[in-house]
Length: 231
Image 1 (cartoon, rainbow, N blue to C red):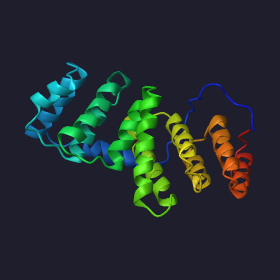
Image 2: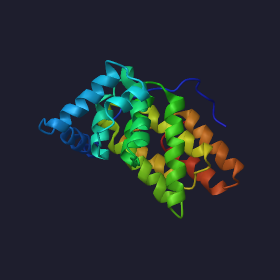
Image 3: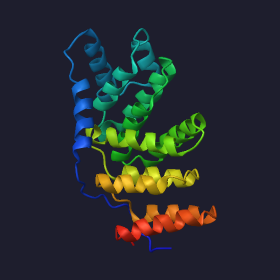
Image 4: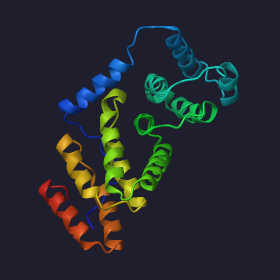
């Protein structure tokens, strides 16, 4: 295998028009006129970021509040800075448990970005594993599932102000779960968007491919690496 780099490298990126469009859509959706519901959302954000309320205190204070998935995402985006990352994760789980919400791919990916940006890699990987396993069970194959998760991560990247390492963590998690049939296409998509994977991520994928005896995947990924001069 190729020589390994000991720490992830955070690279400068290209900002394609498509990513900027996604960011504009998210930002626009979070800039609606103030109303009573916005005041509630602000109160929830302040209770988490300033007061650091516990799970039980949140439940007691907001027991009568019912939020939509869109409103949950607005709160998460307001908690996107690293200092509030643990509170964002608390709200993610609290809203699902206490409001009987089923988080969609978008809220998962926003939270994953927030956690990676704050270097809470263990928590981010747990959410990645959860969404990949859940989505895998909903589809006959892994290609559509992987593409959907990757598209959502790309679409929410700008609004959180995330870091490229989120895509390394995504690919490493796919390798851990043996979801490898379409990772070469995923790598190509990321390179087209300006996000090159680290040598560690490529080595991890190659190792899993070799163990799976899918030789054609090994050569396909290796050719991609040579083409991108990643070695």
